[in-house]
Image (spheres, rainbow, N blue to C red):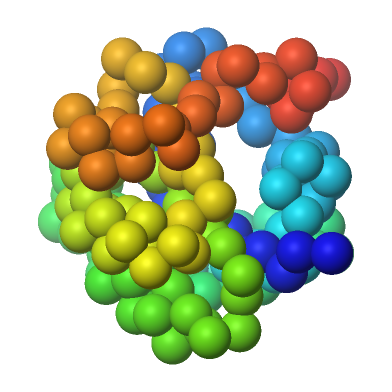
Length: 161
């Protein structure tokens, strides 16, 4: 059985699907990754804010390994931002000998170099972007036939009240 790892840019994915008017059921997404891509380990990269501690606990219970980026409170009128790109790339490279293939979940073109490298090494299973319209052309080009979109499985992973 394959031993695949997922590396998820949570802010990018979350904003991407919300821009399409829906929310992810993170527990269902974790199950989807396990069932369809044999993901044994799913890293979720996100900024840490004290007011979301209960959400972090539920994400861990759903089976994610959380990797936090410190978030600095911006000046009034600006949003808090925790850019996780370097952490995601570093973790994917640190773990590269432990997994068979990687699933990279983002729409950010900054990950095109990681995707190209993993593909060249035979280590790329799939790149999953929230949607096609918001996905970087650089990322799509790097992924080629390995590109996929979360809106294609929205019915399976959408949060429903």
